[in-house]
Image 1 (cartoon, rainbow, N blue to C red):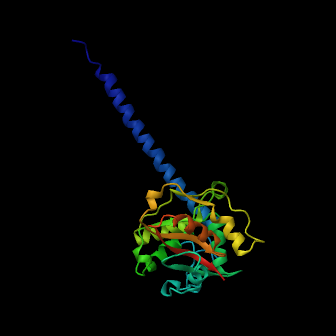
Image 2 (spheres, rainbow, N blue to C red):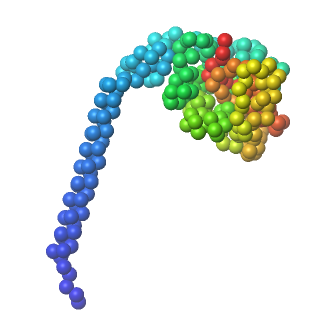
Image 3 (tube, rainbow, N blue to C red):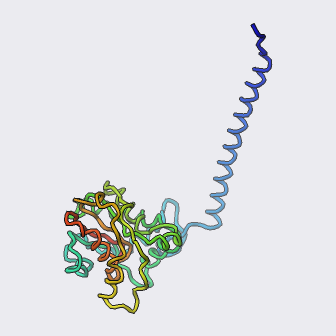
Length: 261
Ligand SMILES: [Zn+2]
């Protein structure tokens, strides 16, 4: 029977124990350092409100209390014949259309949308989506939806921006409404050229063939809440709805974060 080298075994056991302790110490030190760096960054570059650019107070998230209080809410969900709905009447056979906020030039909402789209703050969209979802949850026809679909970005724009701002608004709605978010199976197949210097019909023609449903069975028989950031000409929403409604079993209602005034 071969002799067992106990001293070597004990040596390796000690080695492993000390190695384990050493690794845990390194992890703990990294966590402490990370917290100090984060605190220092917050001290040097305090997070600012997306609406007024003033530093956020403790407990405030993305938008300060004063801005929340002064945001121009539309309350469109209470009125089926609201301005956004009337804009799309006769163009899109929707079950309902609403917008959360009014978008005015040089306003808090313009700042918020700018931060959401161009300043790498997609969480703003999620926050606003969560708030609006809590309201829509109890209002028909939005309470009857099966799923939520954001207006897709073309891959070129997605790569440039790094995220789809409408997806984040949709994500917030999905979280508070408890409805699934469908982010695949529907895409923008070509980039939309500039819409300026085009009349209404040319704008619609410009986008109507830009959207494609790749996986029709995902959307078939569904009541979809189609979600976008800002409703301006309505051409993008019209193009999206046109693609989704090619399947006659689909119903669409629309929610945008804001409506241009
Ligand atoms: Zn503010």
